[in-house]
Image (cartoon, rainbow, N blue to C red; front, side, top):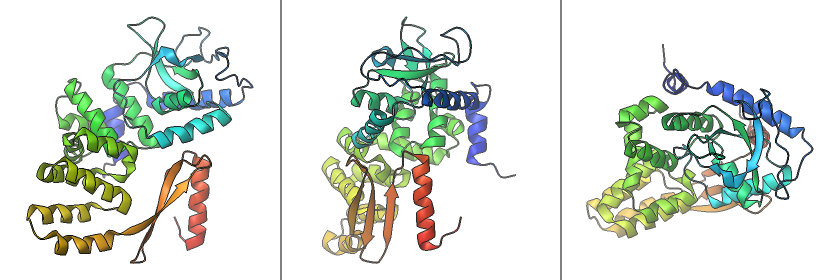
Length: 335
């Protein structure tokens, strides 16, 4: 019987752990409840807490509103990269609609009066950017540091998977803090192959300047391209790697093109003859796709060869389905 990634996630992430499906069910129920609320005092005053579940206001499953300043990040959150344009787009939506989905959190076991997020760090940053001073939380039972990572990884994976850079930063932290001993443990936790885990962690060999630039558009660098970039850095150094990263972002270079460039440079062949064919094949005209608030949410690329690609990050599932349906009808595509 074929074992899928979902099976591995279920085995590695949920075996004898907090039931993530229960967390998701409570999030959906809480979102439905808060969507009906007429309270919209975000940023002006602290609304009265909304409680669900048990009678006790601080019981598991309760929804409450607390000041942002009392909520600490999950140090082992699976999401580590938060592009400014993405936060600005989310902040605009929160200003218009308010926070519909509470963030799972637990009461800090070490600091009275404080809470620790399990997941929802993008929401927290967007609320702050929007000038909103409170956040809705869904209380869960306290969980271990390793479980904090497990839950955030699975919830993010089902909504909007982490980028290679997210995973590299999170996995390095797990190893450094000895929550896992080896890359095989990470592979077992996430359903990734050990080869992918190893190649992803190679991103941490890149200098901070390169990783900072990657964080601006993390979707542009996947595991394969990122690994080639780390090999390029070992051969050519920081400045040349930054220049190559700019080409990857602006021209949409793929793994094979980056590998060819790296191999040409390693063999010290004349770059005028060897790199130009790749540059000609890879050259494209990018066209930004902007949200109503003018923040970039995607890009259309047009190649002289006739190839056209579309990459866009939807925050709303309904809008995503509508766009996909329109594209299917335009090109006669079938599921």
